[in-house]
Length: 302
Image 1 (spheres, helix red, strand yellow):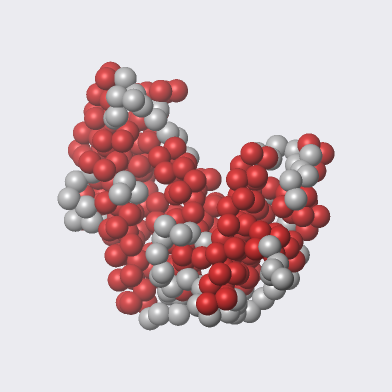
Image 2: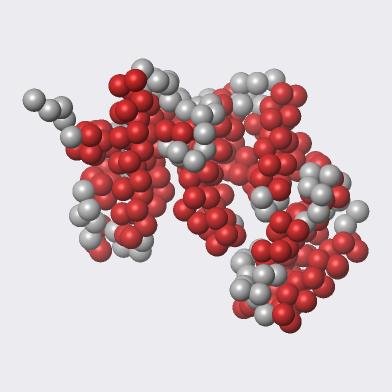
């Protein structure tokens, strides 16, 4: 006799959790993967309606129940969720605990929150920060979305540290991400989203040290690039390039990268500027215009 088909078992586990009723700590890695998979569908479909989520998981979304929803993206998320739950089932069979690799095989085995309510909040915060900044999708695609999810769940696990320890961990992550082209300002936004999401579903103390960590990033950035300069930089880039902007909020991204370089978070802003001015993305004239915007930001930065 053979055991149950892992794919069928994974799909059923996802269906079992569309009501999003599970709370408290999760010990089963397959359930962790299912909770994350369902919550990513919640964001993609913009609904918590269990029936709509069931339709999404079974490939039966239609226009009346999914108006404006990117059904191709939903299908990709369903396939991905099933794979992750199957990986979780394998880990369960081996007696292994849940970690980031359960929901993002590329991430490695670092700690993430396994509280069901806080894990859902982390998933939503990750997607909200991505939606607020199209740069993520344009540069990092679906892989970036997966890493945003696991980074968010890891950040949530820092909430119970003392403030100094949490700030050190967040500053470490900011250096890693900034070196890959994601200015620390983006992590600042992500943390703000995470704090807001957690406060909307949990006790006030559940955010722990996260507000202090977000505040530390903001305070450091503002030493060189304050909020007004971020907005001005956006206006300068918009004026210079108009519809030819590589991505929305290009000016603020450049200003944030300048702040990181001034702070020593990165050696320079090349990881961002090289991407923004790539000939595959902008004309030579537009690249020159972006460099002029950068020079203007440098003149105004403290």
